[in-house]
Image 1 (cartoon, rainbow, N blue to C red):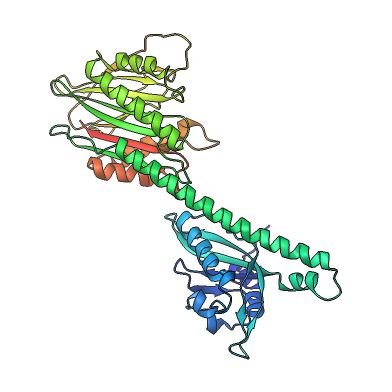
Image 2: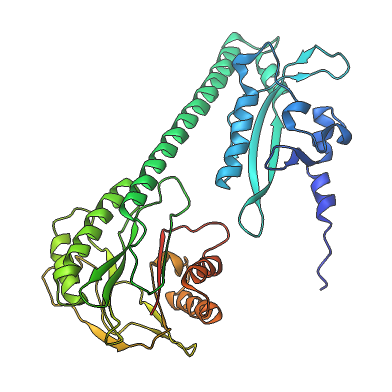
Length: 409
C-alpha cells in the first residue's frame, strides 16, 4: 500500500485547540486557526511580532504576573530543551474593539521545544487551553457558595505550586553551578607533557545535577614518561564530585610512587574501601614511556583505551581488565599488560558516556568510536577531540558525564 503524503502545514493549522510557534526570541513564527480565532487576532497581527507586544499584560493586574511567568516558562524551554507545563494562569486580554477595556481570561499553557539538527531549540510550541468559561461557570450565578470557594482555593493552590516549582528550579540551578565549579576546580587543565601534544575534554550530562562523576588525570614521571588515567564514579551531583576528588588525588599520588599502573590501582582500591560512595568506581591507568616506546596499562572495569596506529589501524587495550574498585571482598593483585607504539600514534582514553547508549550493546559504541577514530585520526589532538564528541555524543545532549583524553605519541 502506498504511503500517503502528509501536508504537515495543513495538519498544524487544523489542529484542535490553540497552538502557536515562536522563535527562541519569543517572536511569533506561526499560529493555527483556533489560536487566531480564540485569541481574537489576525495572522498579520501576530507574525514576526514579539509575543508580549501583541498581548501586553493588564497594567492594573500586576499580582497576576502572567507575563513574567509565561516568559520564564518559554525561556526555560529554550535553555533546557525540555517541555514546561505551567500552572493555571490568569492573563487578561485587551478588547480589540474597545481599547482600554480588558477581558478576564484563564489559561492552561504548555510550552515544548522543537530541536534542530545540532540539538539547539529552534522553535517553541506554545499550546494553551482557555478555561475562562469553566472558571466562570463554577463560580457564577446559580452555583452554591461552596463551589465558588473550592474554585478559588484550587486557583490559589495552583499559583502556590507554580511559585514552589520556580523556587525549586532556582535551587537546582544554584546547586548545579556549585557542582560545575567544583568539577572545574578538581579537573584543571593538564600540565604540558613535554613536546607531545595532548587534548582533554569534559562534558557534564544534561539535567539538573548530572555532573562531576567522571575525571581525568595526567602525571609527570621521572624520565620521558607520564601516567594518564580516566575514571568514573557511580552516581552524579555533589556527592559524586566529592568522591571523585578523593579518588583522583589518591591515584595521582599513587602513580608517582607505584611500580606500574597495576600497583597504582591496587593502592587506589585499598584506599577506596574507606571512602563512602567509591564502590564500583571504574578507572583505567596507562603509563607512557617514550624512551622505550611502550604503553603499560591496567583497567579496573573501565572501557578499554584505544590506540590508533600511524598506519590508520586501531587496537583496543583490553588485555589487562579486572573488576571495578571494591567489587571483590578481598585484596587481589591486578593484571597489567604492555604494548609497543610507534611515533605518531594516538592514545585515546574516555569514559562510558562517550560510547554507551541505553538498550544497546557496548560493542556497538566501541565500533562507533573505532570508525570515528579512523576517519579523523590524522587530525591534531584538539581537533580530534572535537570531532569525536561531535560524532559520538547525541544531538539531544549526553545523558551521562563524558571525559576524554587524547595524546599524540
